[in-house]
Length: 193
Image (cartoon, rainbow, N blue to C red; front, side, top):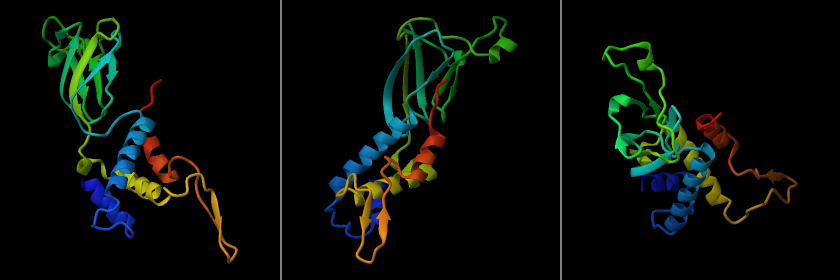
């Protein structure tokens, strides 16, 4: 609900406290959040008890969310102990870890291991993402700006320019994202090589 109130403040009139546009704004917010997640290749939206399956044989697993907690990993139906993998919660990344038989750290303790090979045999259960009021502030500002832009342009999709009687012309971006919003999303984008 916080994002709705913030976008109403950003837009100003004709949006007001009466809630006349709340349904439309909630739809635009949900659409922008989903499109942003898709563009970045990772979700910032809060989720609890999510399940993701991965093919084994890899040393690194990238979860569909960032800011992950409450992680449990199973390989072929057997739960792994927390010391068998390394979790990078903010990145939503899990790296398989090798261990030493002696119990003393060796060089292999810090090099990536591999999850057992197989198709969709690695199951990860987790909670992740951010609540609306806990999004990173830079990302939140850009999301609100994009929502406000899409609300204002909702009646003129595809319009590229408007000529006024005094001879001035206003040009509109035809891209999906505002340039500074896209730049922010590109910096946060997950890239696989």
